Image (cartoon, rainbow, N blue to C red; front, side, top):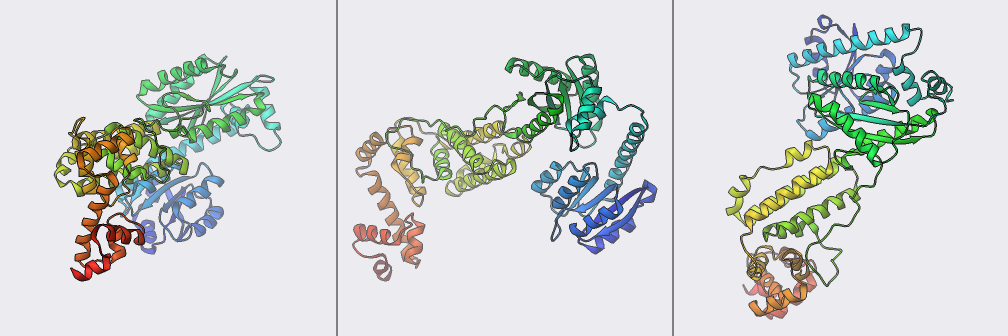
Length: 518
């Protein structure tokens, strides 16, 4: 019988799962239950269950923290996650720990039993493999490679493994490969790729030795890759094999190891590069080349003034899309992505913030332009595809293309009507931090030249026109009884004293006096 530990802070759920599921019929026995992660760890140490079923949300140590601790102590422990929250963020983080399944509460009995049946076969196979390997008089190539790549303290075992593999005195390099796009129930496709890899590298044994260290497959090359051409050639070789099963993959090279006993360093480097693969180049063997996420974004247009470091890039994106400047919107998305990477080099953080920015931009566009809601609704959102993407370059392209597409739907003006579009923007966005220099970038004009155009056509300087629009709006809000500081913020003045001075200049009385009189 496979021992099971059930972990959930809800007593009714724990008892319900323990009594309602026909555990023994499926080859399992519930040895204990726990109300939180700390209690679960104690019982895990005492009972060594083969399967842990844990709630993702618990007080103290939650399910994700529990799994993290279990993985440190028992990497091969099997885990099923329960959650009352249909939340992609939690599911994605749980999947990163290589769990065996993710179930939503209330638990569907048939779905859980299906998981249990699949796991029983998997655990049985693992046990047979352990028995077979322990009974072998000589270690297999796979076991020797694992000893080499995950050596124990002292290094004697890795030196012995290198000798038995015939690798003494040679330099080497580790290549790791991780399959992508596998859905539940597609283990057979993964096994088929492993079989194809084993056959291929058995024929190429002089070049390298194939191994598996879940979730990775790997090759220990007997000679390090010499250059970019060799790396490209190997990537194509791996692609040819995985493509037979229609699967995508990411692969990384760990760099040259001076001796087989140092192969574990190459292995660790390759694994770190795969962990950071979201930021790497797509369709290439990751080899530690610097990515371009810290490079400055190319800016459109010609400007004499320096960019304002305080400028709100998200507001600029809104204005660019609303003005129909798709190319500028694309550039701003690139700038935003790089700012997010600089703030936190984390996939979920970047995707969540891009979703927030896109959603906020669309909401603000629709609020000011109700007529465009139907147009925007007719465009497929890229958010689902963005969240499933494993590469930041693809994410940037998806979001940029969407913003450019929306700007094309909104902006119908051509060269020559820029001043009309700017005055329309001011009427709608008077409360934003509008600056002539920023708008000159959006409309691809020299700032000084655009200022002259504005004065000639409108009859007033840009800042004067903006102030007058704001003051007119302020008068409306004051007559509605709003407080002066609230009105100041509402129309775009963050400093109340500055607002008072502007109001007196254009109206002749203070905002408070105007409110009393009206």
